[in-house]
Length: 120
Image (cartoon, rainbow, N blue to C red):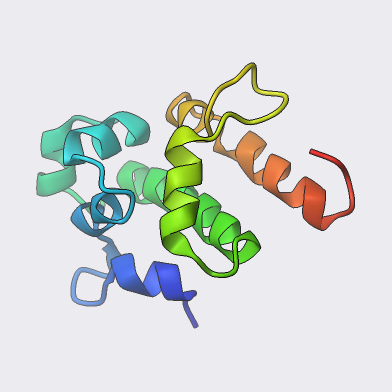
């Protein structure tokens, strides 16, 4: 069973996370999603189910889902947090910045810290 945020972006016919739906959640242009996924924006339209696109969009969705869970299942707040809230220990970067640099796991670890009783 998929989480509610993932259900909103998953395309059952294509069997993949659909880039346009991911872009709509944090109100980002598709070009920004392409930058975060480290692919050309045309790749999102031509090959949305490519392994690289799906891996990177999956990372974004995992982070948004976990942040949403921490914020009372408010996906809109999680999207704002992802784009605008500086993270402690990341030199003032938002979650979006390390994810775009290929360090999504560091953000996932950061999100797990408060849940595990560690001050983030």
